[in-house]
Image (cartoon, rainbow, N blue to C red; front, side, top):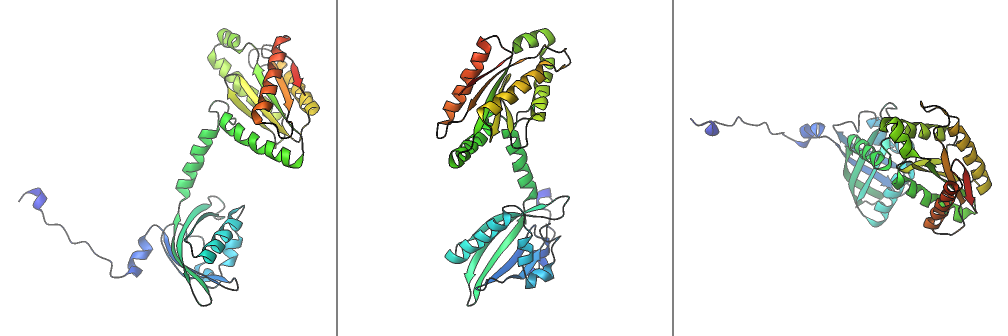
Length: 303
């Protein structure tokens, strides 16, 4: 008998949904919210990790405690999604992070359809554990925002943060200053000590610069031997003082090639309320070139 004509063994078919549900990679649920705001899960069954760390019996009578444990923006986000779905009878689609287990919190995606009831709204839907997907998204986002050599934010990440900070500065009338940093004669350094040593200088410079900054400050690598430091709530004079401290620190640092072999030219500028972002960066860039024109290893500012 030809192989492809061999009889196919019978496949067991589940007798009911009750035997199938525990084996699906998700959770089927009914969620109910009364007009008074009381919430509970009349039905909550399935497999995967979404239910491994929750008390189903408690959720059957009161779901508020679980929702209130959601951290960060998750709690208002979930409550807003529930309210919007209930008000407009739109599908409920959201996701949140279960705050347990602490060693590895799990991300859960929710998709459900609302159904108006006499005393409230009932949703029928599914929860899926999307932890692996979210972690992969975060990994890819970090790669897209991070300079692979130094581990610093890259230009893309910097511009997003700088846009946000200039908006805050305009709204609140608070100072914001930046430094544009360039390593002097970096090509000569590479030619003399090699590119591996040049890479090491870039990495060490990133570490030293970060050690001088506050947690709210940011240093990013723009490319090559150019860096930028963003200093919220910092005036031009304060920025100049910090830039000069950084310049002296780097000049005295060994870098594995002896003190004085690595120096910086730095241009500083302060944000003018409402000015285009490109204008702030251009002024810092002009200040940097002024520092190079007067002999390097110095700080110049443009008010």
